[in-house]
Image 1: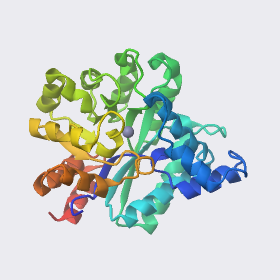
Image 2: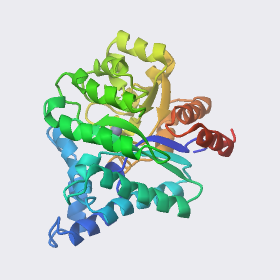
Image 3: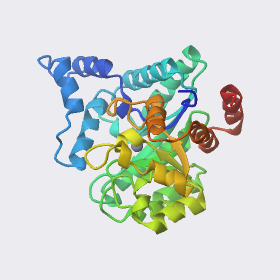
Length: 330
Ligand SMILES: [Zn+2]
């Protein structure tokens, strides 16, 4: 696919190299030798979880294999290798440092381990630029459940912000509590000059979209429930906030490709970027996402614009964006 070169929404754990994760889980004693790769694979791709919340537990498996510094470094290196093989030129990889502390690492150490994997990849794959987004997490019923860990993520991001660490996010299963309780975290981020995107209106209440705008999000992850209420959709169109759309990731029990709101959002005038979300869990990549959108009747011109939107909305510096535009050459 000609225009599939940029991915702004890509989770490290959900995009893990599965054979490597299996070998690492064995090596670290996380799984027993009696578990075959096939069984491990089946756990990842199990589809009959009773609820979407239960389904989020899938992420525990890749996260378990990324607790030691060298494993964190290797996991992002392997992801870079795959993205490079796909011909990608830019990706913002995201992960939640607080999910990788079982071996006693601080959040800052966790972040720096991933950064060192990106630096190694940069030497081996000079055509690919990777940047890192640190995720705050939804846990428990509302923001109070892990305010301390989330605030640590904000602090560790402040300390590592620079060429590679570029932004914050809020991820995980959108809990049912007051979304605005996350506001103090983003106020702190603003104070520190850290830009941020927020998963909102993905699987939770669509009104979270308005909350994310109120909290000053620079971009919104998914936002697809905007189509449930004209006011929410209008807010996205009026603000022209870049939306990180991940079509395949949203396809499942509730909707198929044909009923995904991406076309409706494009027609309404939303600023759309197309991304993979979880390459391993969703068995997708940005090429597949572009192909699916094309199959939905979205034109090449619009797909091209989605890539231009992504470069414009990227969290990297202006110099890097200029280089990406030059390399795109369209
Ligand atoms: Zn996501």
